[in-house]
Image (cartoon, rainbow, N blue to C red):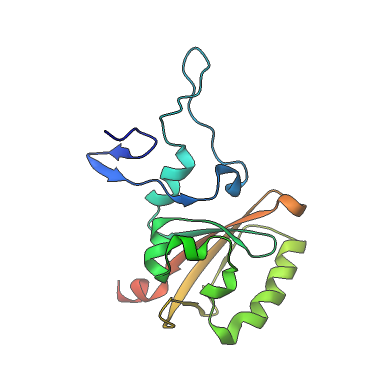
Length: 165
């Protein structure tokens, strides 16, 4: 029998834990619930794991250098890369070749002055799948921490799906 740490149950539907490096990868993560006696419930999944995979958007967490620290199941599905191929690699692998130079410049400016923001509402942005195909995206950035401990939570929505709806 699987423990709650291995699988969370919500309304009878299994939610598998996210592919993660550690809860600290999202700026410290959420802490496990504690019992009345103050003991952490070790067999209960961290809320951060369930929250990431419950999102309808792809979630990618990167450090200040653009290295991928964490992804959710939707990011794996949307981009077509296995989680193991994404973790530790550069976010640039998810950006079309033609936009990578501009991305590197933008990332430097964002890290110098991080603030929550949306991207792609006015200027079209594109993502790159494992098979090399490209698709329109809408992106939200949420910085957590600062300096060397800066993490950026990136929420990515497939713009092609929104165009159909």
